[in-house]
Image (cartoon, rainbow, N blue to C red):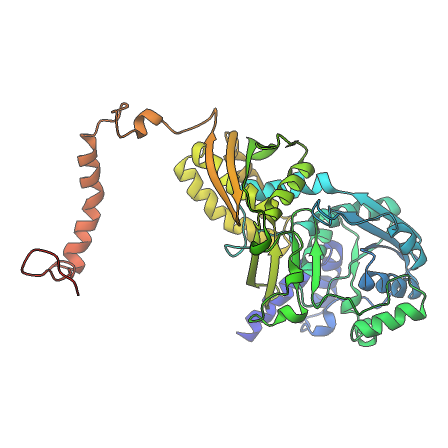
Length: 481
């Protein structure tokens, strides 16, 4: 069993390395008459620059972790190019200010800084596919953090190519999912790139045992970050236009009730809006192309603005908040609190328009594939052959998912009011209980008897005397136990 498990680990590690490097390692280890045994020394831990090219793109947020990592990498001889992605942090309600990010990165040691607005790309090419696929991880998580990573990585790799870099870096820890997502995406997108991960370099993680060490280093190296730790939330946060997550700190105890301060995108139920809002969502090929507030007549049409409008409405009505324990890809259970107001509304509306337009058997198959789709996104395989297959399959199912859905938002619920489609499979006359509508009811008897054949065959084999039935009083009338 151990040898088999070790073999699986070897294949996993190889899958995270560029193809050329894998070939080189395999050639070295197969030289001679016997294959050398693989040890933990073979796990790639990048000690620092060894060649003439020391240019590196760092996924940079401007916070304490990535600011200190930027300075530390620069001290180790890297020429760091910082990249900050605007993914709509704040959800359209309290948007993050990116105006000082470039100056902060340069003051922290970066040679250059890219601050790019990816909001429309993120929603159109990452959020909307999740909605079309009805993808949801472990029946509850709408994948808000997971789908942001391939969006960031794709642009980061493009910057690395433009700048002639050999390395990319990220600030993810060695215990989480994000390290896998960033690195699998990097290796899938471009050959010749390697990942430098400070939190997996012994020199770094031995030096910085906690936040106090990071703050002390930032003070010593004049890194421009806030030194006041008094108001720091007792948990970590990650947000984008689709959702906000809260993890770690006081939330590591799964029995602990989340602090009220974790309500950022949604209001608590006791503070939400006291009157409902009715909305209409227009769908085209499974994509929400317009949202209309039926009360105020406000409209949104661009992907990012659609999500911002629904975030605001959903948040006011306490829609889209969950508190779950999930299974990380790296084999650890973790607790997270997530708020996804706009995404929760879109999922409800999309399921409703599909009920009119999607064939029953196609829907069953799609639902099965949706589980695998969600796993691919969560585990970091956005740029994979299986994901290409799944995306093409999902797009095929959405060809006729056109029309409109109307929803009432109130007290944590998105309640269907009605739906219509030019591609509907619903036949009102045939469904009616008042007219025949072309449905010959005499055919029902044969259909039922045909369906019952296997049930009676099983009953005769497994229960020849019949299934147990409840006892009935010998006298009629009302009987109260």
